[in-house]
Image (tube, rainbow, N blue to C red):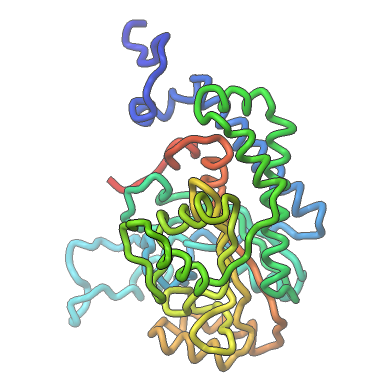
Length: 356
């Protein structure tokens, strides 16, 4: 019919985002969907082959796993007026009897199972109420989060690098027709870009070294690099695209902008964290060693004024026997975005959910 929005011509991604229920009928979104499907399947295959147990973590939670406060509240209360004398909301009257949110990570609950099963992974939806209208942020996305007992930071990096290379090799080998299409119509040089990642040894540098490189560069960054600030996308891209021309692993970040559960280094200024940065996208994986010392973890929670009552069960994991352990998170949509060459994360998930 004349009203059918898809005509025999190339439509812009902006236009197709307005009709997400129909855009799957185009060649481009068919290719993206098949690549996403292959990556999802291969994630399970990789972990199952390597002795990991797949666990399901809750989507509704009372914990802010990242400590950033950017969470969607789940409630059955009517919020048109406060319901107590203090002029605020008393969540004791709510469905769960306390504040509840959509989960930002499965990590905390994943740690509980890693303490018993040794190696686990979660793969499910996560939610961030972060008002970021960028090409690399979404409000609802899928995360792969392995958690491993007895893994140090080096082991964590090795696993993350191996997983990334396995997934990229799989799509090049098993989605060759779709990859050729994406190479021709979406990003010239896409296949070579992915092959370079597969064949390169990732460069490992400290955050301090990264800042030094950025400060010594003649580049005019949007945010001036200095020790103590989080790396911005243009910083990450400079390191991967201009300095090293390959993926970069940045370790030992300042603790002031990292999550409460990360294990501190001896200097007590930095934490045993790692981010894997890739050309064009920037950060694709973030992880760390977890703090397994009960007293240190308690102190950090108090220092950040987090709700210790809600995290009491998490402290039990240290209180009743713990081991050194590590883990990381890989965002599926960012990986799909990188693998297919599309420039906007909204095109890497079937029905994107983003701020207005």
